[in-house]
Image 1: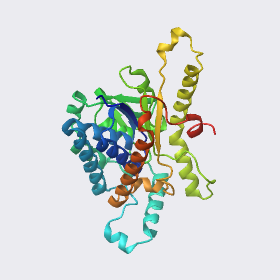
Image 2: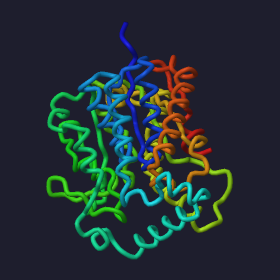
Image 3: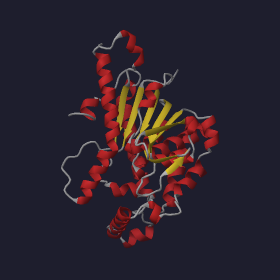
Image 4: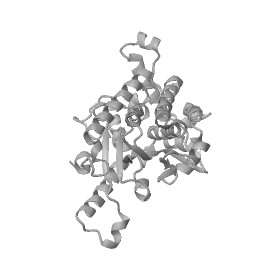
Length: 344
């Protein structure tokens, strides 16, 4: 029996990407669906490329092992990208996180007045070594188990760049996750790139132009869409601005998808144009509730127990979604784009 296939869309979100790790782990363990493609940005790009490499070398279980190994290495590496992580001794001495908060405030102040070209002139990025330890990029581009699309933002043009499977390299992944206040722009083929979340978080359009791909897209949304109350503190305001910024491109794409779906549904598309449009079926797992109360600082927290907690929440979210909505794959969407992502 042929299993239904999904395209997976993974948002970025720093350490919150461990929630998406849990989603992928649940999907891989259940074995109910095939993965046709992964389109991803930033931490999502890392999850996607690690999943693909693990699958290439060891099938579904290989992908699960590779993802756990990668996140464990991230936790062990810590470093300048994790100003709020604490080891066991530090946690014992600071059970309420007072010094953790102070460290992040100091780090935030530093990055507000100095660029990475000043405070990190050697361009040190521990993610590079971790990715190279976990992925054989030359082998992956030749034998990827599914299609990959990784988004970055071109610094000079301000446009999104999507690296396809055959273009992937360690620098493409680092470019997709390059926050400009932390790291120097990443150069790929003579062009400089920043985090893809600014222009495509993630990029959905590559899925629509590949005729070989299925019409079902599962979006793993890490950045909260709505808030219950208006933020009042400086930190809360900045957190919300960050969320809005990194959701803007996705909202724009989903609005276009909703418009095209309405045209097809209302049968107002001319017959000669119908073949140019696809009836995309959209599904989503949103992390709003699971990540509630976690500010931007927590995206730098790489403590292993924190990452595992997010993974377990992601697994639970996958199990709930699969049980409630899995039968709809291949038949109809399970989200109302207007209600869940657009105008309320």
